[in-house]
Image (cartoon, rainbow, N blue to C red; front, side):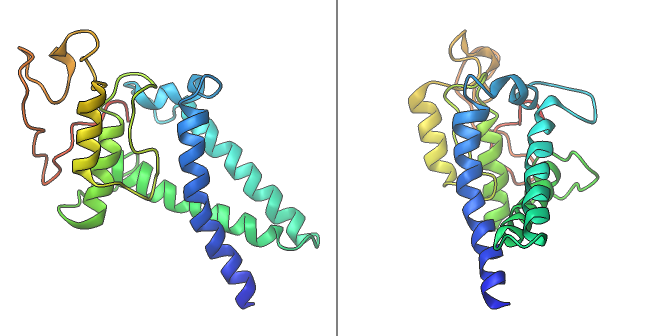
Amino acid sequence: MLVNGLIVLATVAAMEGVATLTHRYVMHGPLGWGWHRSHHEEGDGLLERNDLYAVVFTVLSGALIAFGMAGVWPLRQLGIGLMVYGILYFVVHDGLVHHRWPLRYVPRRGYLKRLVQAHKMHHAVEGRDGCVSFGFLYAPSVPALKARLQRNGTLAGERRGAAASPFRDAAGAPTAPPDRGGATAPPARGR
């Protein structure tokens, strides 16, 4: 029983690494951008094409659990770990960060604030290249992300004139990120 629980917990932890690499190299890569682009663009519907990734991981989790229930150890535990990670993703990413469901909590301090800021910085870049912070539950420090964005010159609008950048005013002059209820990251692009 203890071993099974440890496998589930280890799978949840490992999934952050898998999700980070998948987000960086598949979703932002040439093969996966077709689905993921919808998440970086404005939309008004309840669903977006990017949600197909959740379907893929849900089917994978269900298949692992089913094979595990048929006696292939430890696939059930791996599938449960994947499912738990998916639930955490749904609560944190879709709920807390993007407000895709009625959770309207805005963290004002601590790790959750840092997590929201890091993801909003990920969305501060136009297109798929030059983004930062590809994890969903781990967030690098905000100053490090700001420095990387500024060093790379990949903020939205900097490649075509600075007016669209969330760190610049309409005239293109640098500005501080707006304070949105304690959040100091640029406003999120897309959802």
